[in-house]
Image (cartoon, rainbow, N blue to C red):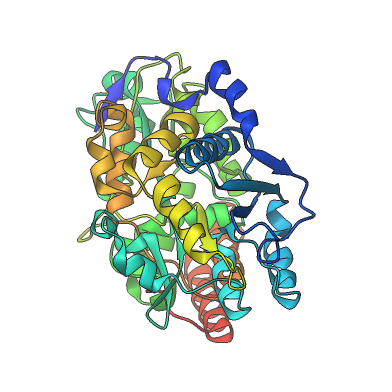
Length: 424
């Protein structure tokens, strides 16, 4: 657990000087493909990164081109929610990009099935630093590596230390049972609200609820049993007892953060991307890992972008060189944290000063080392939505916990069977 008085998380801003220096790399409007280019030393990279993430990628390209002066990396700006269809269409013309990012949680099964992604297994097996990455960094099908997740976003527990001190809570909770005891104490005090979280009937609501089961070894592919019922019972209890306001049923993660930032809530479940906002809070705050379920451990699902190489690219070796030198290094991990706030999966990056000396980020770094495995399923978005809808209906009081649990189990099972694929 870690707390801090308000201060700027210096990791999350890019300087004007750096931004001014990024114009050296080529950026185009999305009309070009990759494998068919006449210049065999030009790599085409399809990216929908925006803001600080785009700044980071541009900086990495500039550094790579500096170290490889005979190579040009052409960043093609794309639209995030159109990326999968654009990539699938590129296969038909034999013109997949040399490099691309993708929404790995949702799009991975579709892109592999559609023949978009090159097999990276040999590259990965020969990669000297592969042991620095947890299993969640490599996305595989039939024991072949097709996508890499070197950086991630994760959720954890934020707490208002001023409230905890006033209420008499000695330490922030590390388990769900401890959290419930703390929520009871906050309610009994009578001045503050309990916990701000997203209970929206969407993938966001599911993302915040699922770790209650994931820490017991129950993922979307094994979503059944009394533990599931107990998790829904807990959601119902927290709503009925006022620990979570009924409005939580519609809050997304931004909504819930805004509520926590008012200083009226003892706790908030949110992600590492809020660390910069937390630094502006007018109260003492801290972070810890997502509270572990009884008899289990703290495990959350990772989010983020996958990195891949186009299947029809005729420059796969050069594309891998870019990934190895500009994406997978410890320096790349440190810089994306510094510029964009993403959490590097590389274990040794956790020892770098920019991260090791930032107490607030350490719980998220720890979470990245033990994160859960998503379904490799074309219906992953629908699977999450089914859970989000069930949880939201319990928080709002529209559905009893037992009925919502049964509906979620049935809907998730049907979507898993329809979409195929496992969760490992």
